[in-house]
Image 1: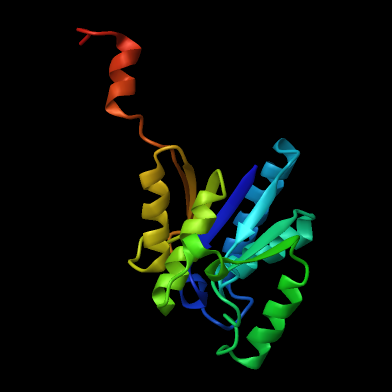
Image 2: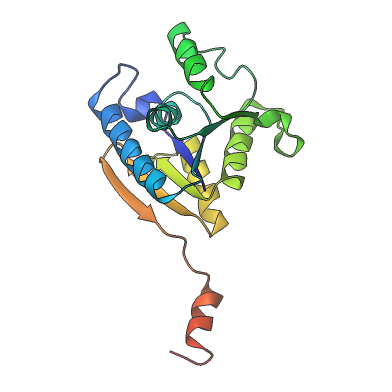
Length: 189
């Protein structure tokens, strides 16, 4: 089973100064979820977009737990504009990936625009996973758009970690109306 992560950049999980209380809460919650999944799923593989913040914390916890992960990078050189320390951390993490997928090089997921490349990366991750962990406070932005993409699939569960409230919830897919009616038969009320 493949599990993907989508989540906030460092400002949404406590900032760039780490460790900090919010980032540590996110890290612990991800570790707990991943450890539980590893116990239940023999074929568990994680998928991360490798962005700064929640994506990299997720990858680090996969490494710590011995869970193979796919680095779904939106385009080559995604890290090139980051500070040197962030680039070094990225390189240390990505070299431990089971597989690196450069999403922009897949014709069906190509975009000529920066924001489009990030959206295509998210779409690829949604298309290639069965479960989503969303490190998301509810704020608008890329994580919100990724969560909405997952919700539209109608067959995916979302484990949501709210780093602001430090709560976790499960969003089950809502059954389609026809399925509910079929369960009770025609004319049932």
